[in-house]
Length: 75
Image (cartoon, rainbow, N blue to C red; front, side):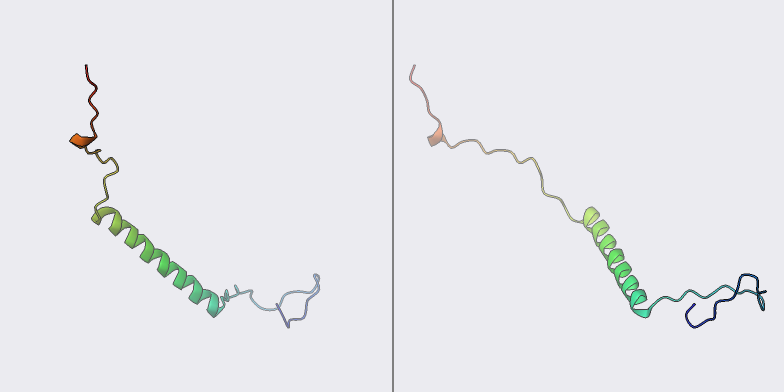
């Protein structure tokens, strides 16, 4: 840790060791929650769109040609 004097390996420890509290920067926490919120909203939108919006047909029938476009060969 910054500002602490390094102790020698042979020197006994003083007091009961306690776990250190993890320190997360505020900007990182805010960015993490914003990114997570956007991800959750995107997932909700994708599931809603998948089940509620009708998809267009991929196979569309070709209309028959008009009568003026058909070439008839004489026998």
